[in-house]
Image 1 (tube, helix red, strand yellow):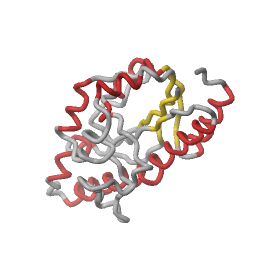
Image 2 (cartoon, one colour):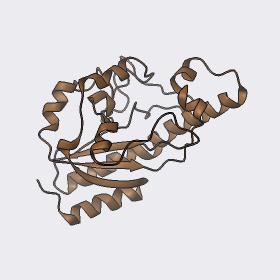
Image 3 (cartoon, one colour):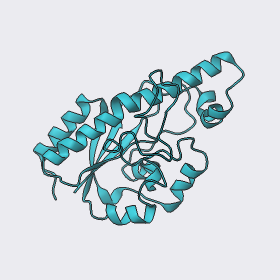
Image 4 (cartoon, rainbow, N blue to C red):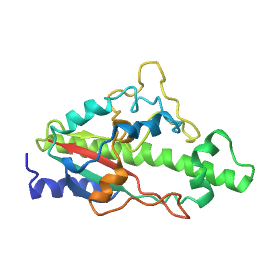
Length: 217
């Protein structure tokens, strides 16, 4: 299905009103999906096991087949003021299990972590669902939003933790959407194909740009 200019304008305006920095309509075939991507979920991500991650979402091969049924996707870059120091950026996963000795570095890490969860829960997750909803009302009946990483609907009020259901029933089954990396999406290679390289890591007093996709039939 073609995405006409009026519908694209409505989707772009909605996204920017909800906190998006930039929106781009891309052919779904430009999305790079690799089986090896989920290795970074299984090994090295403390969000693995969230209900938007493997093994609770379609496998990579299954998703590749599903993605082939879509013609277009909205690539949404979200605003962020969550500036990471080089030290925190290089050691983000390590610090989540072994906090740094320096009190200043520890405080910066926890502020960064809380802001990631807050941005996702208050802006990105509800925002991308609203974009999906608008797409559905415009006639894109199988429009599907994605999350940039683990789900944070169950984050505590002070954003110090996420109380995911774990092996029990999801607390928000209608609000969850699959995370990109868990589906096998290589956002770095996708952006490279589009001529917009992903920011290099580690960050150096820079705010990383969170991305999501909304698949459109």
